[in-house]
Image (tube, rainbow, N blue to C red; front, side, top):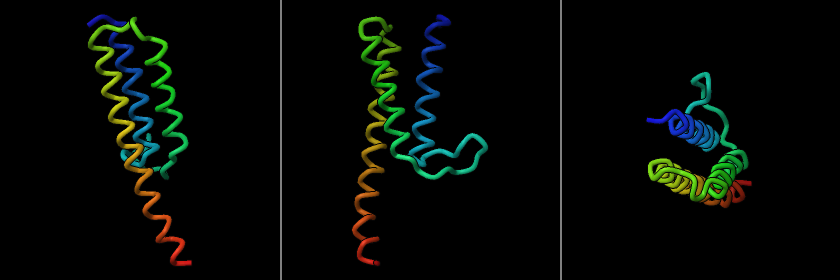
Amino acid sequence: MESDTAFFFTLVYQYNELAMIHLGKLAGPEGKPLPMNLEAARYTVDFLEMIDRKTKGNLTDDEDRMLKQTLINLRLNYVEELKKQSAAKPEESAKE
């Protein structure tokens, strides 16, 4: 594997991990769970979407596939967490 491809995969992987930590799907850097932060997760997804736009036509097939699959996975997880929060909010209001 070419070193630029390896670096690109590492970059995408790191941002994937960061987004999953913000979504509460993975433990934080020290192995401790962090509070969910949907805004930070959205920012991370937005960053990868910008990378996708800016590199259009300049990636190998493997790089493009990896980036697109990562974005699909992150978007699905983000929407899942949004739905969970939306479902929890009416229950919280009813308790008050």
